[in-house]
Length: 125
Image 1 (spheres, one colour):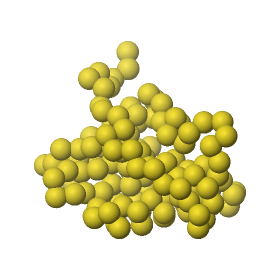
Image 2 (image 1 turned 90 degrees about the vertical axis):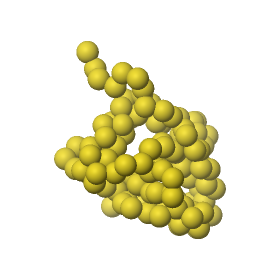
Image 3 (image 1 turned 45 degrees about the horizontal axis):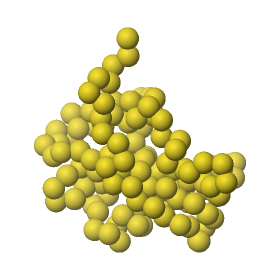
């Protein structure tokens, strides 16, 4: 497995541990259906939390969260819609990003709550 793949897995593991430590219930990690994928699906008492994890060994060029562009947001929204319908969930959804910088075990984690909102118009013309 390529080094960047290992780093990504280590970053997701660190993000899951961070979330558990902060009281989140983890529903799924790397949930996918066809081409739809969600990194982490968690839950609090009040809401479903969809977390996109971005891991980088350094942030010399850009912050990890900057990689979540409009196209990525559209894919996350589509996957979330399918997830909510598939599991018949009746909770509001929140979209977070967890930025993981460094190397295991010395990661710096930043949790950006409400990192983005679903666009009013998510279809493409």
